[in-house]
Length: 239
Ligand SMILES: Nc1ncnc2c1ncn2[C@@H]1O[C@H](COP(=O)(O)OP(=O)(O)O)[C@@H](O)[C@H]1O
Ligand SMILES: [Mg+2]
Image (cartoon, rainbow, N blue to C red; front, side, top):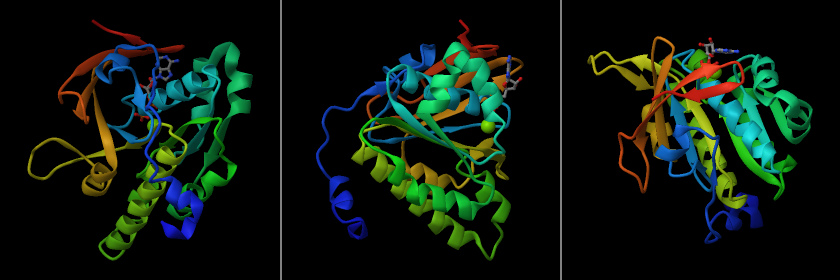
């Protein structure tokens, strides 16, 4: 990381206290307060399960706490319609204080992640990459796989450095595929993304009820669960 000069060194500095970003849900409890600063949290699950909803909720929450946020959307920009419902009266403020970017190729995604620091300062309290793999997946075949894995790994290293430098939470979302060995839904680019994600949440769905399962955490037991439904204004806990 020496190519970043002092910013590169900054990433290694011992951190002030980590802090947590909550969204006012049972999900906060299984993360003992919320998504944590200084690390990447990965949220994975099938399409329509609620990953983007959670990313938008965290973005609104960051703005309501007086912070700015970066949201990189790789899935076609429809999140802003949903943001309007979730942010409600705060919509204008969220649009002003959260920077939404759209990538439509994996190359554009690389460019955004690589350069996003240039618009950021100490007022930022969240970076979202939703999703990390939808564009990666489009380009991937036997010939490109190792090159794309390296590029994805570089993006994760960059996001990790940003998480540390600005002491903020980074959230990435990931999709799943059905594993041939019958073990169920496996995250895409599992090894690369798992390596960089210090906290990992899986979301599953049965009917309208979504269940979040803690799959990795450095100080909490794996397997903690929280259930929610998606509502007009966001999410609501389910007993
Ligand atoms: N206003 C709303 N009320 C209830 N459910 C909604 C509303 N808006 C979106 N949803 C639900 O959100 C789900 C999509 O969630 P999303 O976070 O986009 O999934 P993912 O990002 O995991 O693919 C759909 O099941 C949709 O029905
Ligand atoms: Mg989504």
